Length: 470
Image: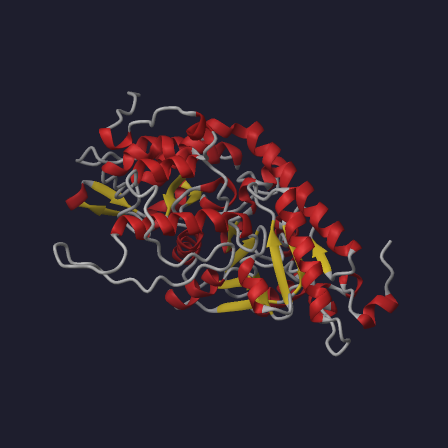
């Protein structure tokens, strides 16, 4: 493989004591906007507070503009995003990566991985060789031979779910889609899009599928095949549905392997669980697995990986003469940059590096949970999870400042690889200071979340009496 040539726009800056102390993001800012460094004109800064809407409009070149220049707007936008990195706790995105600077020269090319990744296009501006390398890596991780799998790099976890569930529908046209109520919303979107009959399965208090409810609904519909969405890490609580228990339940209910299809939505945890146990494996009778590439691994653009069995893909494949390829993807045209970013990340980090990330995130999640529990805050952490669920902060501004995700009286922190203990300590410190203000006069109390995260995890005035933390 040849080396990437750097155009003049991407030439490195001279190394000075100041530049050596700068972060890659700061260096990129200087490369892109070298003339804005000392300009006084600035749009309103949000500091460490939530980012404000810039109220932008498209400028017409050549016309007089009394507002800030294009470069000034972009520099201030970059500065704001850089400040807000340290307050990004509530959503599953790994923003801890520096490879964007190395790969920036690729942005001068339009790369489109249209059609089947295993078939070459009639044009050279694609990255299918990188894509196949990434797919082979995941196939090995999830224990399926190269000649037995098919897959592609998607635009994100939702596309992976749409593809996996569509495969199940095409293989079993009369099948019913079963998904827990804590499944990602895209699963139910797929049911609507494909006009599929579906059953919503109850969950336990920790967010895991209620297998007795699954059994009851399978038996009610035993005359029709089953398409089951298995969530490996639910969106809000990080619960993991047990593939083995689901397979045993199907067997007990009389479903042979030709009468069910299992799709695993492993958007966040699909890169974590293989380093803890082998719950995701094509040695089991599962049909497809999808992950989000921008989550645990990290990528500047949303992306994902979808892997299925090669024998299944003919049900979706269509020969497209215009692109001289077969296409079984959802989107057709696909971002050719993301496979390169994924390939580069996997190659520089490796399985040992990922394993270290997994351990650090699990340790930091437990650290946060223990600290919150010690401070008398309602909190829950599932086994093998990096999602810490806590009582919802009373102040909306606090929620926005730390970019928390909230459902009912709960909020959560997702301890991603870029989250440091210093950030967690700052969060806890500020939360405790704010709580003193919220509840100082006794007129307001912390919410009871016993029904949401379990009585043993709730520290409200009622449950605190009934349960004493060990």
